[in-house]
Image (cartoon, rainbow, N blue to C red; front, side, top):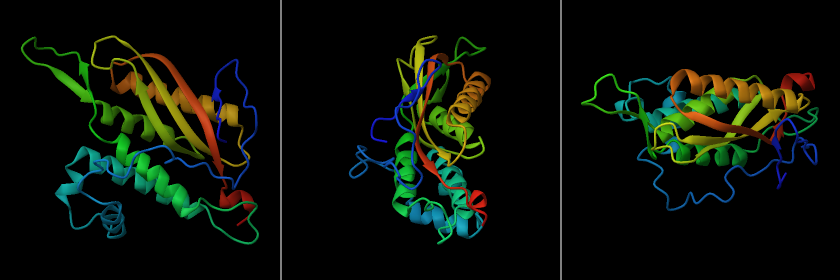
Length: 221
């Protein structure tokens, strides 16, 4: 899976992904030395373990931390359904795989560039941050059954009104699923979310299936 192929109407993957041969979602990302926020993954995990009680404003009131918390919660939901067992056809995601996804989440949830929004008052300006849009894309993609968003990115001059933007999304899909069908559903779901909640002019939206994971229920567990 070192050379994933975006799913487009004219494209087919050169090689079908094989369950258990995990890609490295964090590969090539300079996480060490990057500003990944004031709240560690360990603290976020402990906060989830405690049922998000007592209320922690440092997490709940910070958009970046909250995006990371929700992504971690979705990954945990996936992990609870993926059981490593001798009768399983393939292993559940390795902890390093999940850590790689969270590395991407932490980087992509950073504020980034400001994306302008239409304002009813000429004296004021409105905007949404690039990090918020990436979190929106990730949440929409994760909502598709059997899908985990590995990474997402926006290419183009997002700071200019009506500038064409290219959206790239890389996902992991449950083993045995119709990869083309799932990729198209991710594309539609993300496109609808962007149209509903932003004013971005999407020039293209490419979805790449970079990895597969095993659903324990499909293994009869």
